[in-house]
Length: 131
Image 1 (cartoon, rainbow, N blue to C red):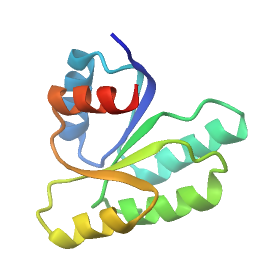
Image 2 (image 1 turned 120 degrees about the vertical axis):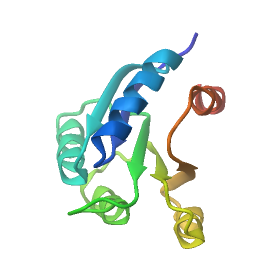
Image 3 (image 1 turned 60 degrees about the horizontal axis):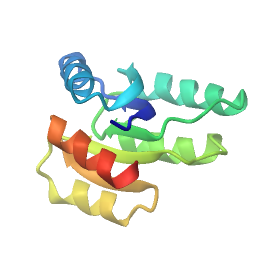
């Protein structure tokens, strides 16, 4: 079964990250799973990987509503500070606000919008689409 090399999850909610870790392992979706509860910490990590010529994660799952730096602010900073922007970014939300999905749909850096929580089926669909 094909696997991604690395996936990054950015969500301020620890239980959501914990659940996604379990589901991602069950789906055997990636060799490496990296989790952050802060968009700022995730951005620092991605800048470091970029600056050290490391391999960027293939997919970033990004929560929209987070304290400090939210998902939209993360994307702006990511575009400015990470020169190799090859990662696919999927926005995550529990929001049913149609404005969030509309913003995701018009942003070229965003591959799509997914409602939380992720499932094994969603991971399998991404595997089929990208691998």
